[in-house]
Length: 245
Ligand code: CTP
Ligand code: MG
Image 1: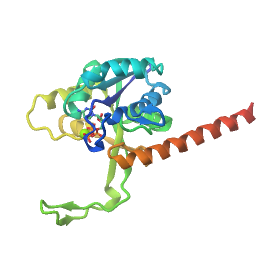
Image 2: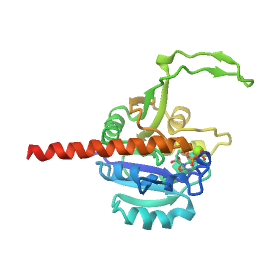
Image 3: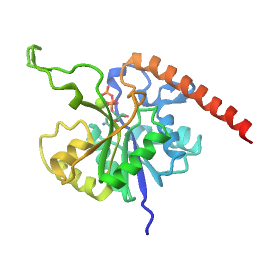
Image 4: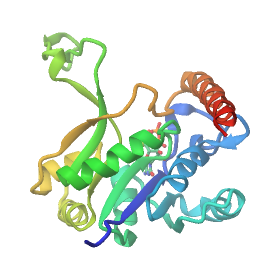
């Protein structure tokens, strides 16, 4: 049987406007490394076959020299220029993604781990389209334009959506092509593109509450704490392993 192959798309072409920082948030240093380094590292160490990094045209050189070459991310096959909106950046990556399946990931989600990547890969092979998410913890309300509550959907049916969002590469590319040919967009994730322009139902797969997207300044504080916790975990595992040998 032919081995299935996987492309990871790492998105880092945003403006980071909600972060209000001088350095774009995807390149802000977190424990000495640019934010996007962490997602690239997770995919480099995983069993995906290739990585496509999407960034602003003006940041391609920086990414190549100061991230990809510096840290030896040999799986990065291409660094492509993104677009104004997230979906335009995804579309640019889909043009060059060449493996059977594609895992589309926000570069601002630095805390995805081995387990989430392997669940994503297994999930897409089984369901053909899946996204990582978690059940919401808060009550969610729908409001009207004057901010009065009009409805409270049943919480047990609500999930917050994360990335990776995973598809058969040809299918999601086709769905994107159809969408790009139209006027109105208002697209906030890739599953929406599949729901509206493709034929697959999208399965939700459990991620983790740590898989947050660094969006506003307070997320940096949480991010640093999570990275420190991961370091301690990794060191403990290494330390335990020394006893097994
Ligand atoms: N992204 C992208 N191309 C865009 C917009 C977003 O590649 N045109 C990427 C971002 O770099 C980020 C991910 O998509 O890794 C999720 O987007 P978001 O968190 O909204 O980042 P920004 O759009 O950069 O931030 P903001 O919305 O605050 O401006
Ligand atoms: Mg954005």
